[in-house]
Each structure stands twice: as structure tokens, then as C-alpha cells.
Length: 247
Image (cartoon, rainbow, N blue to C red):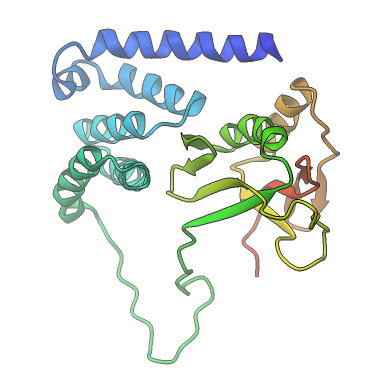
């Protein structure tokens, strides 16, 4: 575990050191010098340690290169993370550039007849955050500190992690620890987090095993490849890859 964490930390230091060297002038000028080299470094830095400042720079870099759809997606993520962490300066920068980009984006407008139901076009409600009440915060926090960054969450406060899309997981001490978690009982059954591929699910399993934590075998569940990880209270956090949308 220590060796793996040290390797990741060293990689991040190398990436960030390269970025500091590349951005001793204004960010726009640095990006214009050699965007193809800057973008992978920013992307790797964000992969190793998801952070609002990094994804903001990545969005600005994409914009400099004319990759407007990628810039739009990265800047929206940066704005969501900035709002979660109270960074109005970053949110304002993201807004400014989004306002400049959006009129230049190619868009497709789909008009649906009134009352018609078209699968896949229903608007899903935005989920802002989930609060997980644990039996012993001191025991549970190290488990979540290991898992959530593997799923793309950045730690913003002592017990809060936020995804690039702005979804937050808040781990709190239960007010009544004697009320134990039971799967199938009232309340949370499990929390599923999407993965981009089977390999990503397998990588989460490998990293958790290297940390000496219990890891079950991944399951094939129809179109899903799922890994039901149990926290110290037995609550399941489920990284899963979907080969097809849920119907």
C-alpha cells in the first residue's frame, strides 16, 4: 500500500512540477506554446488527484486549442466543483469562458410533440449530495479516503468528497450508532457510482486489495459489471460499468 501511494504521489509531483514550469507566464500564453503537451499533463494530474483548479486549467487549454466541446465539458465540471468549495473566483472564470464558448458550439435541437414520451429524452433530476451516517467516523474515514479518490472524487473538507460533476458524498458520525445498518432495511441499500470501463472497475478492486481491504469478486449483472464494496458498517458502495443504458 505504501509503495503504491508513494508511486502515485511521485507521479503527481512530476506532473505538477512540469505544469509549474510551463505556467510561469500567463496561462493562456503557456497553453498556446504547445497545447498537445500541456493537455495530457493536466489530464493526468486531474486523474491522479481530481481538483477544481486543474480541470479549470484543462478547460482553458482545450479552449485555446479550439476543442470547444471538450472545453465546455471541463469548464462545467470546474464551475460545479468551484461552487461546491466556495471558490467564486474560479466559478467566475469558468462562467466567463462558458459564456464565450456556448454561442460557438454546434447544437442539435429535438422538438417532441406535446405529451409524447421518447425513451432517453426524459430529464433526470440533478442529485446534489448524499450523506452517509457511519457507526464510527474514525474507523470509516480511512476506508472512504482510500475509495472515493479512485472513483474520481476530490476531498474538499474533512469528510466531504465531490465529483467532477458536482455530486458530493458527506460521511458523518451517526447520532445513534446502536442503530446498525442492515441491507434491505429502511434507508440506503447501496450507492452505485458509474465507471467508464470494466478495466476501471478492476483497477478500483486492485487498489483496494493493495490497501489490505476486503474486496469481493465483481459480478456480471445483465448489462452491468458491478463491484459491491462494503464499508466498515457493511454499507455497499458499488463501482459499476454499464454496457448499455438501464431500460
